[in-house]
Length: 388
Image (cartoon, rainbow, N blue to C red; front, side):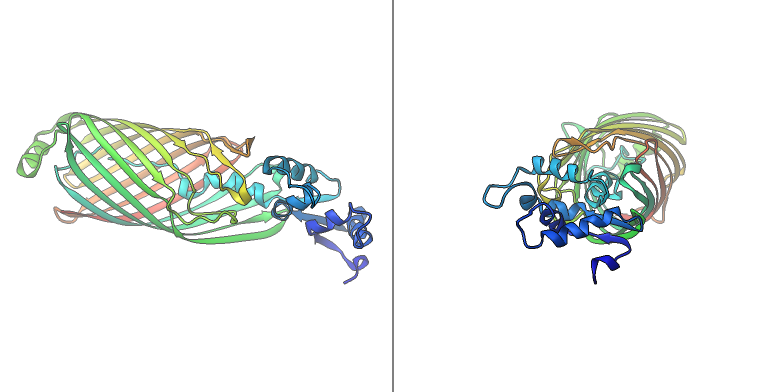
């Protein structure tokens, strides 16, 4: 196809930009002819940020010299994106802003996390979780109608034990996820899918006040007599980078980093009503193998949540929840991604025991961003658990 016959949207390889600056190269004239298309009103030229990032050694330094550092190359690539007549498909920037709001990083709204458990009790659970939502990015990125859908199989194991005369527990959670993301980049549809294991999560918690370590009939009698009770607990959630992760992919199910989340909670029960308040702050390690060798860092993310729970009878309960999360702004190679998060969360859940050792739980969680960027999403889950 000849250059003069081109119309509409034209995707330009970054090599063409390079050749158009090298007057001694045999492809110089052809490259200049392609770049001149930006002056024709019926044509729009586009270049991929991914393509520029992959080409940065040739783009930012002569071939007989070491390439620029990734940070300096990134700045030069950004300057190219401001060339008149050249539109940049900001796929890389899209993912930089998108990753912190993917469902695998969704705000945790969970009631009854400080429940009194029988000493040496073991609990195993499995759940199906469906999440869908809209993604909102900075308008200057020209990315519209961002959406995602996630199917999750969640597996959880809990063991209760005694620690220094207090009741404690350890939770291990592992998810397998299948997700899809779609949107319009400069009006052009784009989509991707991922299937695989998410990061593993380990939680340790201890009840500092109330909920004494008891087992068997002694535990049953205590729970029957506990008409008015207050429990104070603290915990630590650790996330390990065991999930599927590819440095050359925009979107991943794993995060390739550790996170540490201290938690503090207070529970007060009077009769059939329970009020639960929890707070947490998440700290994240650096991901130094972010897309194409860049470094990703994230500020701490604070969450406060409350739950009102009504227990009809032992094993049958409903709850209403609300929470708010703030912080978690990202930087890529020490450049702010301008993605400060402010998320309002709310939820409803219910549990029913079929037998003394087996029961079901169903829950809904909604998240609404209070910032210009972020995600509005809805989650439905149904699961079962077995005690032994």
